[in-house]
Length: 102
Image (cartoon, rainbow, N blue to C red; front, side, top):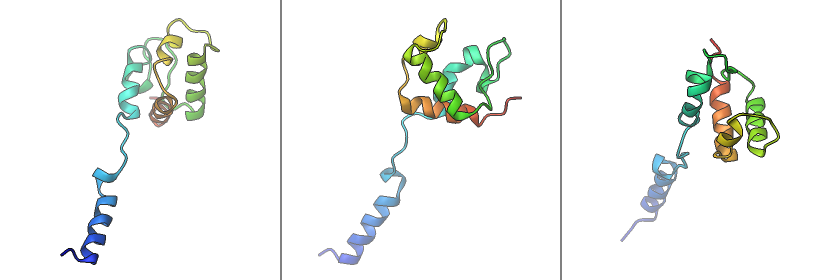
């Protein structure tokens, strides 16, 4: 026979355990790694492209959404941005905005 207290305790543990938590399948850091080829490691460009590190999160997200929608002129960014969801764009913007611009 299962005791009521142990059942409740087991359910509580399951709800707060990492296995019960929703964890994003990819992090902003992993997604932003694709930006490094043009915008430098962690968004710090050394090749004349715009620095992304330390910029305002909402600005970065807005720019990516404009590229994705074709509202912003680009050579390749409009194609790259089409591959990201809103959630992924937010994750990238959050990660890059938290990086040091140095």
